[in-house]
Image (cartoon, rainbow, N blue to C red; front, side, top):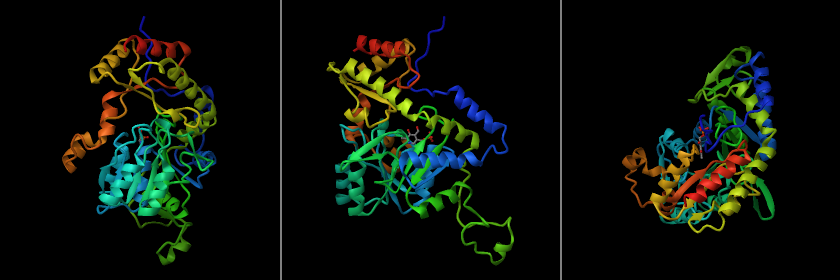
Length: 391
Ligand SMILES: Cc1ncc(COP(=O)(O)O)c(C=O)c1O
């Protein structure tokens, strides 16, 4: 008999989700239809952000956010090296220059101290893209304070962090609220906490940015009934549309949004189960001095997306552990190879090993154990046992 596979992440699609999608498949609208707005409204409700603009994926969301800021070839953007490629590529899509700020060793997110040093001693970027790595909020309030001092824009990459919150001055904020950023983005890839198959969203409290994002999402087109069209006769012609800026087709379909919306109603349940597994892992591994556990904040306020442990016995022990788990059909992942190690960035900018030492040390040790709500108790125990046996 084939052994059951335990992936590092997996969607959880229920009968209700399937019903919600099928309903749309037999409705009048497959792409832009009424569910888009319903999903956007629910995302606003969840985060308390004023606007949500859903789009085809998280990468498109980051690209749209950079475009809405007017990023171009003269602009510099900085992000965390401990992230997926898209957090940096969005700057490159706009022709901008990309640099990386090392992480904080405890939170594994961008270090505000390193960012401040960069602004003071090197240059002030046009945009800073902090990443809520593994579901834990980056230090957004401190980064916001720095933005007031130095004058950069902030795009929170909350692809890992839907459902997560953080506390500042006694108040609770949702990741994606934009209380400490200009815009934030989510991803609805199946590995993430809620999925739309593929999908993304940009959140903002800024009316002007929201208008730009909606226009850029659909080819840069403005229809007759909206805004100030330049043609004199536009008012009489209901079909009239105009393109004043170059946009893309980054739309998402109505049936994807039906899936996202249906999943969103279960977010508290998904968060609770994720937290439960994290607590079980923490409990099982806490007394082992060959393991560094994920950041402390990864329970309670955070809705954990990943469970990254660090193996302190050296890179060989990480590979051995990876292979031992693989042998039992437990498929782990490594999040992340420092982005500037990628030949594209290394060759273009001359970035070399040693640039962000904390991100590199962390990368040399890390392994993300399986974490998804549909994991059974037996699967959680099997992961724990296999890890402990191979330390
Ligand atoms: C931190 C981060 N940002 C952005 C993205 C891009 O999202 P998507 O896969 O929906 O394009 C991902 C996806 O893995 C991610 O992990």
